[in-house]
Length: 262
Image (tube, rainbow, N blue to C red):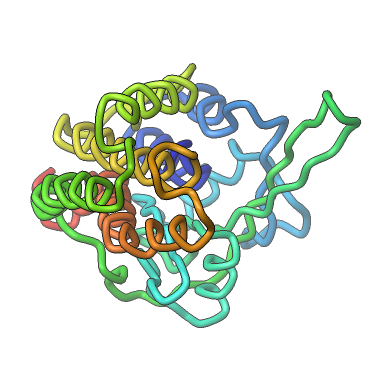
């Protein structure tokens, strides 16, 4: 939750490109981010990996009109629609992009290379067939926003009950520090997204950051392994809500198009 998932960047800026709101160069620059290079493997009509610019153009020619994000976790195939092979690859990567308008999905595989202190990241997106079906467990923006407000209250109550200083000013400072590092040089979503989607994504990331502060830091009285495990278990439903909201935000432009809003 602390950083924007690569599949989220691909979905957001790919949607902006497909809508004609950004140039191919700007879209690819935003998708790659701080990585060294992204390539796409398994694209129909291509026998070898190709660059993102060619891949996005080819997907458009194959009928793709939108891109959805999936953020699956064990026992929660969030945003997926099958088949099992694609779901398994997406679950292993903990993220994927599902195309709208054509039955393809993309799963990232990340490679690190170079000496310590000078490591660069390369990403290969594997194109696989997907099933044409509604994505699993993705709420509307309105539902996500309401659920997040309740999740934030639940998180605060849980942290207070577990005697975690993270429920007060100490954690607020930690949350702000995490967010500053995560958001440095990052734009929330991409051109074409409604303000509500930006608001929902920002709140989802804040809730996710609060969970990380609670489960990975030493704030508060509960610092033993068993007590840290209790924090994680108590906050699991909150984390699930935050992931659902994050997917809803990234997928909002496609959902609006499907409903005929645009």
